[in-house]
Structure formats: structure tokens, C-alpha cells
Length: 155
Image (cartoon, rainbow, N blue to C red; front, top):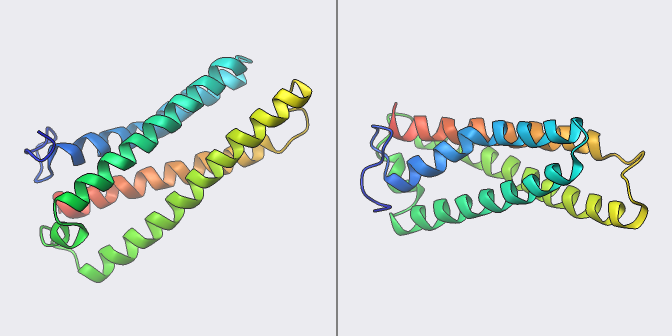
């Protein structure tokens, strides 16, 4: 099923369509969670962040397993009309930003939880400022990931 043709009408397999659709929706999921914090519903914000992070990790695992089983990046590049060098550089930048964003996201969640448990609020912490940067980095990562999908399976 995962390696059958996908549902987006491109040359991509099902698992790639699934993962791409999730990452296209990720900024909106994050924005909805952030809105809960703005409204003062901190519990829902925190719980939704945990669920979104867990779903993101599951999607990355599905993606990584699928790519490895199906022959890797080199096999998918053969379907594209773009140059290997461009695609590889774009992918490397994408992976770097993604690793930094997810690492920062995990750090923010753990440090915020510890602060909240210790003092009962986040007060004057850098939570908002760091959160904005992480949201921007995750959004950029999503846009870049969707772009790679377009580069490999559409153009």
C-alpha cells in the first residue's frame, strides 16, 4: 500500500503523498495550537504541541523508511528534470533547517514544561521569542519539503 501510486495524482508513491500532505498542513496545525496559547488555554496548547510533535516524528519515520526501502534520494532524482547538484544542495539545506527546528522545538517543550512545573507559569521567559523562531523554521522546513516533492514528482 505505501509504495503504490499516491493520491495526489503525481509520480509519487502513497507514503510520499501522505507525508507531504501532513507537512503542508503542519504550519496550520502549529498556528492553531499557538492560537490556543494566545487565548489563554495553555493546557490545550501544551497538549496539542505534544500531539503535533509526535505526529511529526511519526511522519518523518514513515518518510525515512519509505525512502530507504524504495532506493533513496538518488532513485527519486532520476524522475526529476532538475539537476542532481541543485536537488542535493536544496535537500542538505532543508535537512539542516529541519534538524535545528525540531531540536529547538523539543528543547522549548522540555524547558517550558520544567519552568512551568517549577514556578507555575512561564512569566518573563523567552518562550514566545524562541517559539516564533521555531514556528518560522518549521514553516520554512514544510515549504522546502513540499518544494522537494514538487521538484521530484511534478517538474
